[in-house]
Image 1: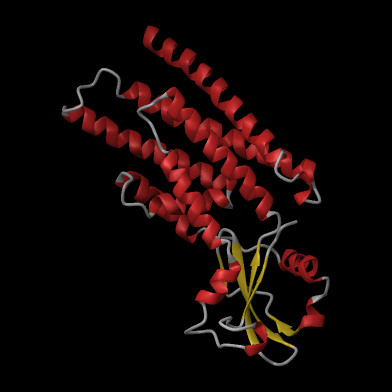
Image 2 (image 1 turned 45 degrees about the horizontal axis):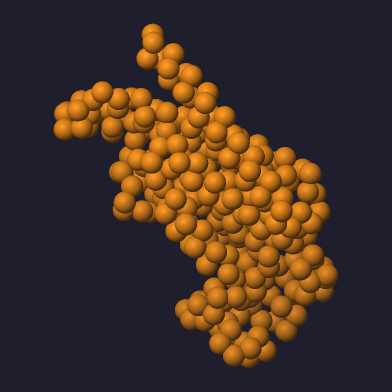
Length: 269
């Protein structure tokens, strides 16, 4: 009973530290560009809720690892069995977190699943996130394009397929035909993504540092750093357009040298 009382006491203390860290992440994000969204209060509160879920999931995992392995010889069979069960429990917690927070958390889960350095319990559990992209509404797509160009779809395109040909956790692609009868692939970033990205990455970074500070043996700051680099390159539509100048895309001179027939819209608001 004394051991579990200590766990609960320690868990409460850890949660306070991590909640403080998440609060700092929220304030840090607030200092970025509070005008980046037209609905700042709603977006901010949504970010706090997402951060709170992260705090609960991460603190639960850390406490579980810290105390479930306590007193077990590292070279014993029991240690290996308990560690495998721990990996699986924690992976499921992270999976639930990604499914609840969606967006960048799904992307982060996919990133972790693809890494060779993580235990197989994580990669196998989080691999289910690969097929969980849910397209946003066509009304939201039209709004992103209108805010980007100040024009309705009918002023730019002869036709625009409402159903996306592909959808991921951060953007979706539609087939369309321009006024000059050229076919294009239109990639649209989901609304509010830039704001959400800053909040989520700040939360992930501060939580990883907090865990490392509380438990030096659990360090995954490098993973957050690698994910940040990966997501930054994936959100660079200009570079993607250059890379797409082959295969299914044709060069269109009016878009500039080296640019394929590819249009990207950023859902900043």
